[in-house]
Image (cartoon, rainbow, N blue to C red; front, top):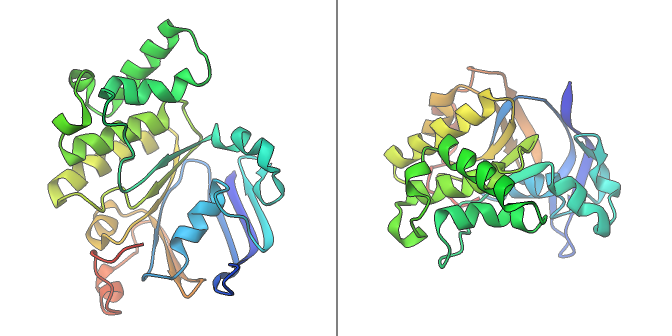
Length: 242
């Protein structure tokens, strides 16, 4: 069953730049999909359209039964309740503890404190940080901060978790810690779409991999078939920005 259906999607920015050309893509519920490609290939545009940060110029996008391309601004919150987003730069509030950063995502819904406490502790436990609940971001390593961000993103048990270069600021060891957490979340049933330039991670994880180039799908690599050596030969490194 498809969680994401993109059909004939085209995106032209006001500057006249075309980011995506006639892109069609289906992602099934429960999949873990990497999106890779050189800088400017359309990766960021693609995922921003999934959580309605951007709208397509043409085509249709359906996420979890919601026609995103036709969604009115005042109803975007209904989509985002079903989606968790993790960014490269964590976006944690520095004056709040790990617990408070995660709980904040529930407090805006006005839930009872007892429910917020239970869900927050469960989320922190899932990412291996129950013992760091009272720590502030400045007291955590980069990998730990990113795991707090993941806990915050999954606090509402989203159907879809979108990750935009989540290991971009981390060293290889911390990157593997974060990927281990994401893999466990995926095994629990959450669909994950992740943009990355870290080809080593893509090779190690052996997931479905969508390779973009100049706004088009160059190749859709089935599970376990992506070979990074071919990708590196195009001059792409893990240090490029999205």
